[in-house]
Length: 153
Image 1: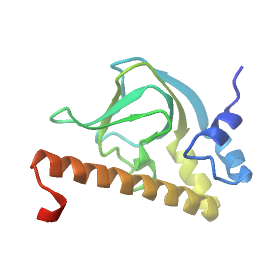
Image 2: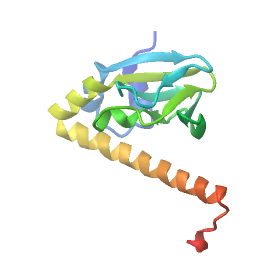
Image 3: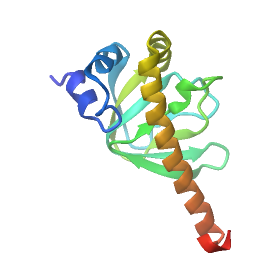
Image 4: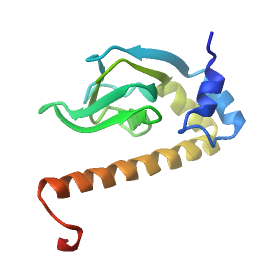
């Protein structure tokens, strides 16, 4: 049987975290599997889970239009809204294909971060880095949609 500790340590999101932080996170973590087409999270619902993808592909979309804004895959994270009040998902997501992930309980994770600010800061830096990358990717998509070149700014 596969244990969670080596999976967390090897996942790109957690790879550089000190070992003691992995120990803190173990109690918040579980294995999950989503079937193709299964909704993982819905925009506006309580952000009670944070996912680190191990395999598969997930479409992140805007609920009203079902417009996919990004497809994420192995090594990516999903559901960062557990960290930011009012703790509601900002987007919806569904599995494009069978997907394996680790689910971290958002409330448990917040409590661990509150009790250990160093852990909270380390996770926040990692999440902000990912959000910056995703924002940049969105900017490129918008520029492509409107056929705008970088020098046209």
